[in-house]
Image (cartoon, rainbow, N blue to C red; front, side, top):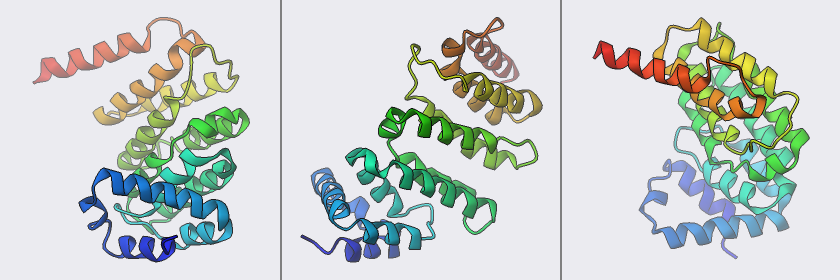
Length: 216
């Protein structure tokens, strides 16, 4: 098998420039190779990820995609990585936009482990603090929206009301239009789940776009 770590380090050094030049078939094969390598060298792939202080274009996104699509065994490690990357941002070690590397984590396997999924969403909504910058809140809401897509109307998750309340709180306290829009999009994933009373999120969304179109 290829020297996976060596190749990853090369791609990391050039911020994925060469990676984006590859055709899709080559990329998909390499992602499969990472998953196979990781199963046989768990400590090595974990150590590699933990050693990377990511930039906006980082091999972490490739590894996260490979592991999250491979097997539920990686769920807890990926959650640890979500916390690690977010904490690097909060400590101002890396730019806020770097949070986007976490959007390459396919949350389907995490969702199937519902207690961990609940822990993940609890962690993300806890970041929705009005004392944080709008740019950070936007990045968190964008990621939250991605992970909430796993929800089904039939789900019975007691914490869903708390999630909705936290998102609505950040929506109500901000004047930033992008924060409001993203908060509404996240609330839409939860509205049917918790049977929200009127005015609905859909109505809020219509009001938001009506308001902005009248200003244009």
